[in-house]
Structure formats: C-alpha cells, structure tokens
Length: 536
Image 1 (cartoon, rainbow, N blue to C red):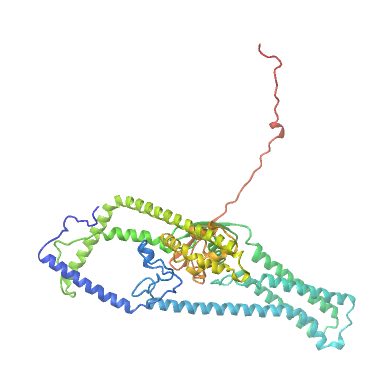
Image 2: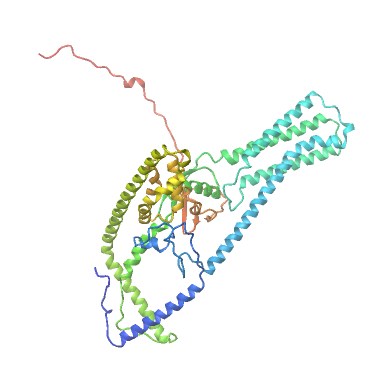
C-alpha cells in the first residue's frame, strides 16, 4: 500500500490555497524552530560514561550501521532528548535528595533511641544490685548461699538476653520503610513502661525504706530479668513467627511488559508486604528492558507517519493574532485529525501482516546472530585450551593470569557479541568491562562456552547486573489504605520505580475442608477360579 493516503475533499490544489498552504508551513516551521530553541535553553546535557553504551536513539532505530568498537558508540546528547533534564526534573531531584536526608536522619534517630533503651534495660538489674551497697552498706544483711546462687542466675540470664536481643534486633536494615513498624514500636513502649514501673516500685519500697533484706532485692532483680526474657519471647512470636503461616496469595504484575509472579505471604502490613515483594522481585523478575518496549511505539509512529493530509477549501492567515484565521486553523486541524484517525482505521486491516513479517524477520536475524556468536565463543574457548597447553610448557613467570587471557581472546568474539546484544536490545545492560570480568571468571572456574553465553542469551534477574540497574532507593509505595494496616482480601497497591510500576493484588487463601473416606482392605481381594475341565 502507498504510504500517502488521499481522501475526498483533500487533494493537491493550485492557486491561492497552495500558496497559503506553503505560507502556513513556513510559519509552522518558524514556530517549531522557536519552540525548539526555547526548550533547548531549559535543558541540561548529561554525558554518559564511555564504558556504558548509550541507550538512546540507537535502541529505537534498531539495526543501523554503527561502529563495532566497544566504548566508541557513545554520543553526546543535546537538546531535549530523553537523557536531558529540565528545570522541573532538577527541582524533583533536589526534593528527592532532601527526602533521602530526612530518611537517614530518622534512621539514625531510631537507632539512637534503640541503643538508649537497650542500655537502660541491661543497666537496670545491675543498678538494683549495686545501689544498696553504695547507699546503706552497713544496714544490709549478709548474703547467704542461696543469694550468691542468684548472682550466677542473673549473670547467665543477662548474657542470654544480650545474645538474643543482638540476634533479633541488631541486624543490618534491609530497607527504609515509610512508616514505623507497629509491632516493634509497641514492644519498645512495653519494655519502657515495664522498666519504669520496676524503677518506681524499687524507689518507693526499697530506696525510701532502705530495705535490709538483700536477698529479697536480688530476687527482685531476678524477676525483672525473667520478665525481660518473656518479653523477648513475645517479640519473636510477633515479629518472626506470626508471618510464617501463609494467609494471602499476591499477584505481582509489571505494568510495562506484563511479567507476572505469584507469592504466598502471611499476616503482614502493606509496607512489610511491599518489602517482601521487592526482595522477590530482584531475584525472580527478569531485568526491566525499556528498549524492548520501544519497538511497538516506533511501529505505531511509523504507521501514522506515512499519512499526509492536504487542505482544499481551507484558508490560512498570515497574522497569528487574527481571530477568524485562528478559528479556521483550528477547524482545519480538527478535520486533519479526523482524517488521520479514519486512515489509520482503514489501514488497520493490513497492519497484522506487517507485524507478522516484522517479528519473523527479527527472529530470523536473532537466530543468525546467535549462531555466529556461539561459533565465535567456541573458537575463542578452543584457543584458550591451546594457550593453557602451551603455558604448561613455559616457565612459571611467563604464565598469563585469567584477566590477561580474557583480554587476549575478547577481540575475537567482541564483534559477534556486540551485534547480538544490539539485536536483542541488551547493549545497555552489559559493558565491555563487565563482559571481560565475566569471561575471566569463566576461565578461572574452567567453565564451558555455553556457561559463558547463558548470561547473554537469556535475560537474568536484576541482581545479576551492575548496581546501576538495581534502581535502589527509588521505589514509591502508593496505596489507598494506610501502609501500616494489614493485608486484606482484595487489597491493591502500587510500587513505582522510574518509568514502570509493580501492581500488587492480594487474595485470601480459602479455607480448605478435608474429609476422609475409609476403604476396606478386603475390598481389594479377589478369587481366581479355574475350571478343571477343558474343551476337547
């Protein structure tokens, strides 16, 4: 089909309409140039590092003639490209930095309060035992054998409590949550009130009266340590054991490419469920590749770019401030948009054929370049084996290390590997340095060519790539319900990160009713009767 579609009422026309049409095009060109200049003045150019190929127009254009040398395909981005920053972006980045500073301050404040509370908890039993000896030592009764045995009990219980608190609470934080952890905050308040109540009782009944029964004071300290151990057991139940039994099945869908995973979660709050989902996301979901999504957009843009609309009866005005001229231009633009929609609807009947042949051609190109890459890598690894056999005959000082061997054989496979990565839109995920490191790792551990190629033939999870692709500290939790409330049947929330988001829906696992059916063991027995008489 011809790329130019013409409809009734729209055709070439000579005379004043053509002149006014050319004049309107010149005015629009001047307007575009002025708007482009104004946009370029508000943008900031960011140059990409030379080790990382630039994922820009090359990813959208696909297969174009490019230089095959690594690190030399990077171009400077100017104007209003997708790597530019406007004033609004700079303000947003500044706000994100301020928010991150606030999160760091809150994290350090929480850690400081936890340390103060921990020191208060462990110092209180020791203070109960020491203060009588400092304030009224002459009035205290002698501590017998039972009292001295309680000292050993207090010492070992405090040691066990210290190790238990260190194992449960003093762990590296996995993430910064938007709200406080409700159960942990309740436990901290409970411990604080419990210790304060013990201090009040100790001040009223022991310090004021200067109690002479030192064995009773020691038993009072032992009871405090026992109660703290029980509170720690309660913390284990609330923080660790309560969430182990699965109650909900959550469906996680990536908004851009539709990748779906299902997980079973226990009784968690929304923010804790979001954290668990993100931990699974970095290990289970393939890395997000926006270059693969640009193919459909470019196909739709190319589909509409082949349509041209011409005006027959409309008139353009030279002055932009004239009212009737503006109305005419608006009416013509509306009619043009309607014509474009109609043209796209008529061409939709044949667009599936174009999509079919485009995908078939892309698959053929991928298979061809994959075959070239496999052959090149196998030849390179065969060369490595020859080098290893030759190095065994050399002196120990002349043997190359795996890094030097990887640099020696990398040029033989670099061209085929780069072409394959460009065809599969993975060039932004792998740099020359990372490929050489992976090659040196495979040589060190005596891996096969197939083991080396597996990282490039199929996209892996996000954690297999560099830290630039982890997108850390950029997730935003969006939920209609409070993030501290628990998961419910039908809960929906979003996890936004950059240009995509994870849509999470929860379903409660149904109650399962099982019944038993008894089968009599005798029902499986049977008797085989043979007739003694045979037919003659």
